[in-house]
Image (cartoon, rainbow, N blue to C red; front, side, top):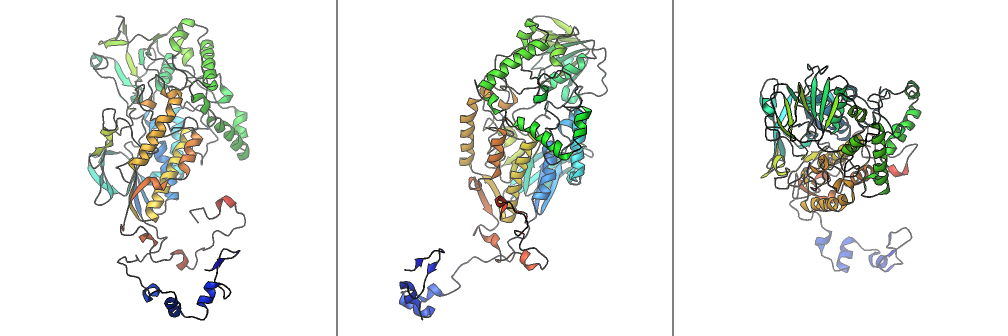
Length: 610
């Protein structure tokens, strides 16, 4: 036999046995001498497969639908067109503008509860935020500016409400049914790929008669904070606020300043953090303008970048506080107790009503600037006694006390089971029902929080398991969008008809989640949107790991976890086409983009967009 030489090639020289055997012989002689038949050397070999007469790099058109134009939808609207060649993108939005949560929530005091400079796109920073924690209108203005800057508006159909989506297997298309909210006209469109970016804070719930008997008889103003009436003037009114989640805390703080009296119903206890900004750990003020000197320093891009990196870095390094009985968790509890005691002026009775019996991070923390101070004011009553019923004039608690009010503002949360508010069906499955606690799965069953078995060519943005236990929401959304872009490029370039995660891979992801979350404070006895408002239920509101962990997990998709249907099922390599690239046939194309003056060795032959 021939021998491998130092260059790892076969040596068939005359000095080798194989070389001697072949020297001076024709192919026919060689075939005869080795006992091979003529068929071994004859082409073509029989096959029924016919090559497709296209180039391997021909761009396939993909019609993609995104439902929702909030933060996630806008981010996808920016990145997908530049990351997916041939995409035909359409974004369906029920409102008349972009903005999602920040468009719909206009109640007094609405603001971001993390620093403004963290709650923004990584690729388009705003150096002119007016406050450390921006108010709703300023946040809305920022995301609108992003949509304008990157021409996202050109792909949006406003006032278009999705009423259902169904996977049509014979055509491998999503049939999306919509209604035009201006004209009432119904229509149907078909797409290769469907992406939901509907969030989980816009399906708010007003309490019903079942929750509070008599509520329908109340004669005053009754609104959910997410459905604020802009014509209502709270000045000098007696107002009841129900709920002490993020919106309840914010609206109560704002109303206390102008109302004659506020009855604040807060049956559950919650932790009030000082600040998520390490420079402002003891922050109390409801407004905190960014200093002129700091703003001026941002005119130097390098200084701003360094400042922003230091700020955001802290958000990726606070994972330890999420771990049960960790030193960081114990220290956080001690710190929050002392901060709360100081901010309520040492009122031990009030302090006892406020401090939860579960550790910080079991529920989502909120800084609540000004909230604790508002609780100490004479025009606010903090009420933990459960509500028994409503009357025409006010609220009755279980101790028999009747408190008349002019208005009731409910911050009683939104749908937290992640089941979509409209039918998404494939076969006999419907995510709007099967993801509910009473449904087939009982919780949002998903692969990496991005897709789910049985639903080909479907992906979720900010769906289940979205962001890690550290890090930032915009960064998490961007990593999700990039993952989906890779899916779309694979579908297009390899002429895949449909792809979906396997049940086996999805079950393994669930297994990991079930093993991971019990070590975190999220698994303890509290109700939160992470567990669907059901203590002890599966955690699905967070990624099972830190923010950095989620980014690494999404970086290189495990394509082996997916099941595929090809346009030409007889051969998965049919997309190879005629054996050429179109690029090489174009005289002005660059066939050597890998040759450049400066090259990071980690990028060699890995940049998909050459």
